Length: 321
Image 1: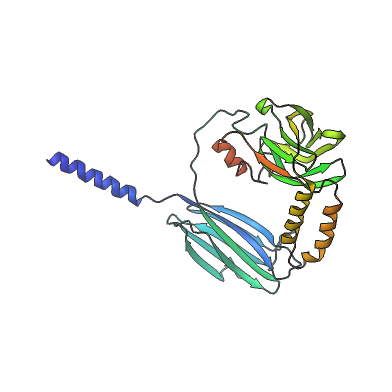
Image 2: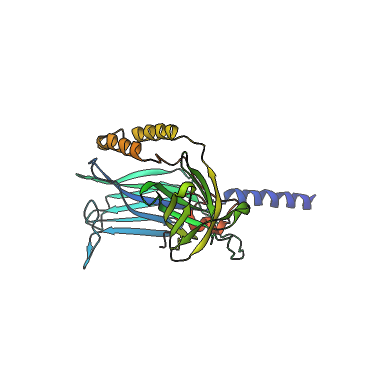
């Protein structure tokens, strides 16, 4: 009976210790300048990542010949987190001995929040705080082409051009294949490798993909990188894929595109350009894209996700360019 009692006591003790374990949390924070004027754009000043017992800082002002003065003039920001998952903000305006903000925020619940640091005549400085579970180091794996997406395409505001004359939008993201379509012309699936027994349909050379379409039309994709780093200085390489007729009508795509423009540019000051944008869309003989999807055929490795952030969203890939 004593042995059983001891075992039960140890089990309860271990469960209690396990219950007291704290989740490892890290905090991503984004420092923004939000102007009051509608004619001035939002500015992303800095991003920070802090873990338990770590600190990051940012200083606005002149340092010798280096001028890093940001909106709001001369100021200093320090963010840190302790092992009790308390995120601390110190904001100084001029006097480094007297912070105008000294605030602790409990991030253990992973609740995102935002703090206004400083308001002035032109706008305000704001800090967005996004707690996240700190990911452990994944198990090691062999460095292969698929494991690290070395033959994937990195689209970082990559322009789509038809016939060297008509701009058809842009793509941002990362994946091993792309589908793009144009009404009453073609749908094009493409990749840097022969997926699904795809055949050669075009070439890649130093960041540019060129593919011939029906009736001697030409599709060009500009600023396409390879791999997580978005390397653009290679080639020429074969581009694989398939080209099929598009069943989408120009009339339907035009109606959809105009509705989107009216929604996107309905507010001042952009609404004064709305009629011009609609007319430009009507004059484009290809109207707009009828398809556009970046994808991959497999679940990416943790190492690849860590490098690019997300397998199909961007534009984190290419940040090292």
